[in-house]
Structure formats: C-alpha cells, structure tokens
Length: 118
Image 1 (cartoon, rainbow, N blue to C red):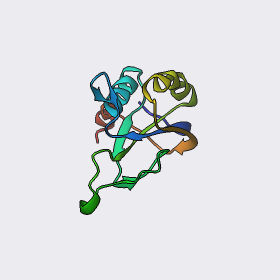
Image 2 (cartoon, helix red, strand yellow):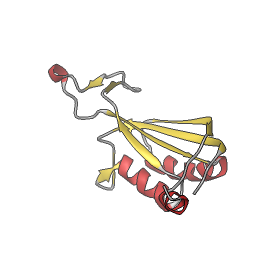
Image 3 (cartoon, helix red, strand yellow):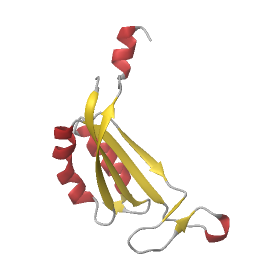
Image 4 (cartoon, rainbow, N blue to C red):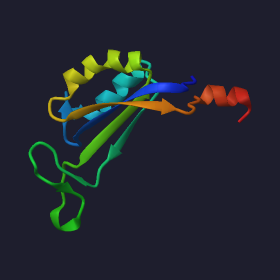
C-alpha cells in the first residue's frame, strides 16, 4: 500500500494500565486498527507524564510508576481515520484523542518493496 500526500494522524494518549476486557487498551486499539485496514499503528511508552489527575507518572527509580503514559499513533486518509473514531469512543474512557492534519512523504508496504526489488 502506498499513501502519499495529505493524511490525518490520530494520537491517543492513555495509561499503560488502562484495560479493555482483561487486556491493555493499546493492544485492542492496534488490533482493531489492523482489522479496519488502516495503514499502520505504533505504540510508544512514555518515560514521564501527567494527565487530567495531575498525578505525575515516571520511570525514575525513586518514584517508580506502574501506569506510565502510552501514545498510540495511527496515520491514514482522513476518511479512514474518521470512520475509525467511533471505536476509540468505545475504548478510551480516560485519555486524550488528538487529530492532526499531516503530509505523508511515502509509505510502502512489504509487498510493494519486494516487487520493487528492495
């Protein structure tokens, strides 16, 4: 798959301990994004942060947290991302969902790279 030009990025900020039916919310989001045929999803674990509670979560040794911030980033076309948003409404009970317009330079899936001889 090749996605070039204008796109929409959704970034979902949650806690790593947020659960959906006994599994992490970030895992459920990634699996649903794949099932929806979105271009890709990545999960990033933060080393420090705070949210609506103003409680700071950090990896520093003296104040070790078990609920570090997590960001899930998905980029695809505007229509595809917006059609995925109702699933986020269901999964994200506490957190923040941010939409940004962006420009994709190039995305090539594995199959396309193999065809190009890379």
